[in-house]
Length: 327
Image (cartoon, rainbow, N blue to C red; front, top):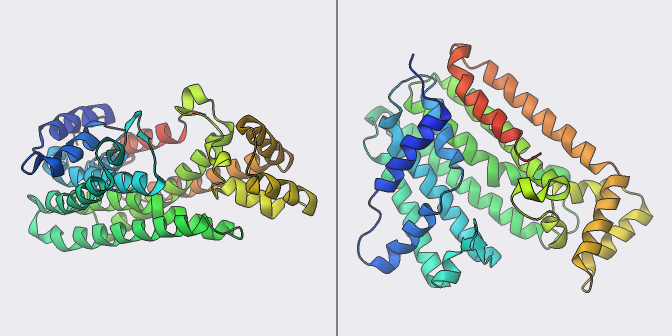
């Protein structure tokens, strides 16, 4: 069976996205949408859909509209996340609420989710409409649940590792998993294969997010693409911070709480002090072990998908590339 490399898929899909006609009146609603989607990014979710589809069928261009739905939905979540976080920049460019205003960010974001549903249904074979709508709608709802948990965790100091894992499953993993499952369904996969690919996406998503937690502390900023220590400075409840509180003795917890509650500090000093606690408690090693566990579980699930191993090579290479980025 003919299969495209990830690079070939990226190129074709990029051309497809550039040709999509988002612009119509009123321009004040649609210009921010074109702006957000033109910024680009890795386009991981549409690529996962296309790679899953290509496990079973060759004509990947037939599902570009569904891939565009996932890219549009993902960027909608980023647009609203930036607004909630009061972020000034996204991928080096001003966020929509900074370039325009908050009301525009809300309304253009609302339009993006409606467009996502339209793209999802465009030229969709009738027999797949119900199952992919069920997957997409459940996924979209769970992403909202994850975002809510994330916001609530900002005001709690008793978040457990299990609660954190569930939050990142909802906020990050389910959209990766849903992308794979939608691609599998459109490709005519068996229910079992579609479920295995979904579960594979969950495990890889958890590993992917935990790796971000790790890299924020131990990554090379030149390779990671952003300064390290951002999570430490904003007291973000990550696996690293939560585990440090769970592992440390009373004295170390007191020191860690001092830095979490400190109102006046030098950023470099806080990053160094908290990192020293992580080093002392071997938090980085614990995080890497967790990453390896989730990654290993994901790879075992992919092995069980009932297509020739040769058909999986591009999906496997893509995921391996993601998991070995910026280390």
